[in-house]
Length: 170
Image 1 (tube, rainbow, N blue to C red):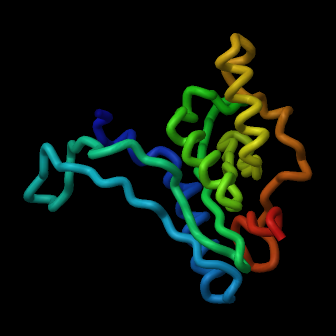
Image 2 (cartoon, rainbow, N blue to C red):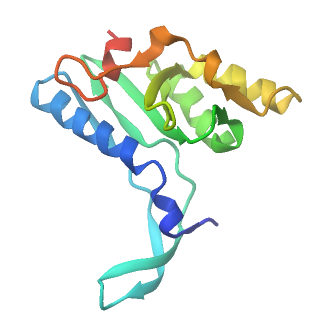
């Protein structure tokens, strides 16, 4: 089982922007999208600070967010990289399996990928993710390079949404 520590907060800036956007979507009646919590079991606790300093995950997580927008079920994961490519090791088989099952039921699965050095976030469909992951498993590149992300899929701060990703679904 994986252990949580301070490295477990990677991607928190991206998640903060997503959470803020999701709150606005809810307030405007556009969608209800929530963060999926991964159950943990504390191992070490700092009683003085009232914080968990070490814990293990009880089970594998699926995706980071799940919800519905205008009648369409959606699920997605948020990935952040400081490299010039998205490492496929950051995507796990059980996540892809969940996304596939979700799509097979009529839902929409995708990634939001943040390139922190460029301060850009991209929308990536499940199909594109699957193609990159499959290629990496077959001996091709072990990452998806920044240049492979189409600028048309750049998630922008627009219409009052910090990361207006739902525009790719409607």
